Amino acid sequence: MESSKVNYLQYKEDLQIPVPWGILAGHGYSSHYHPGMFLSLYDHIYHVKLVIDFFKWEEVTLMGHSMGGQIALFVASIFPDKIHKLISLDAIKLRSSSPDSFIIDMKAVINDFQNIVKKIENVSWKSSVTTYNQAREKLVKNYSGSVEAEHADILLARSLRKTGEDEYEYTRDLRTVIRPFLFNDFTTEKLKEIARGIKCPFLLIKAKHSVTSVSSERIELHQEFLDIYRNASSDFHFVQVNGTHHVHLTHPEVVAPYICNFLRKNVA
Image (cartoon, rainbow, N blue to C red; front, side, top):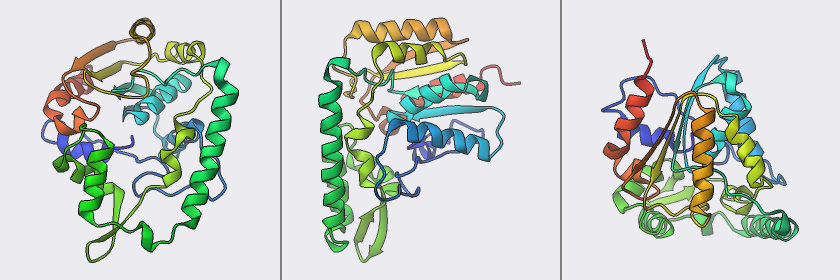
């Protein structure tokens, strides 16, 4: 999910099996959300289920990176009968929310959402146009060293739409990049219940030098979740690899062997 399409281009020399991919609503060339909608984590979970049902797949293998991996965790737990295998790339869990700061956090999310929507509505089309090099430099800067220019080109293939001579517009629904998707009301206990529901074979790959929304959480908490996955899943594998948050993109040769071996396991 999410960036599976572009990442498959990196894996294709090793993975000789069909790999359908999906880009979540509001991302890449997928449809944007309707005006006035408030976005939440549940939207993506629901959309994955819609896709599975639309194609009438009896079982699927889910692979997601970052937020895509977090979404995959939820889907695998909520609909265990639909999931054959699960692969999460650098997404151990969703960040735990604190009941003590719920009201403050929710107020900030709603205010931020209103502000960004107003900003989007007031920005003219021309002012949102960028050159390719500007878009590339911005992406590299935003990812703080996790992605270099050569890898930015792969991500920009789904992020830009050409509108003129060296003129591009972003394809992404900008509402998906703001805090409502980082905000959640899932406490640690709720997330542990989700973790206990993951019954399928599960491969979790963690980048050793990654910085994500859960990096500030206690290591002991993450170990608790690894123990839950190990007890709940019929075949759990946890692998740490050298690299940053986008190691699957920048150095696919480090990640691909684990994925390929996991997918081929128990295949007649």
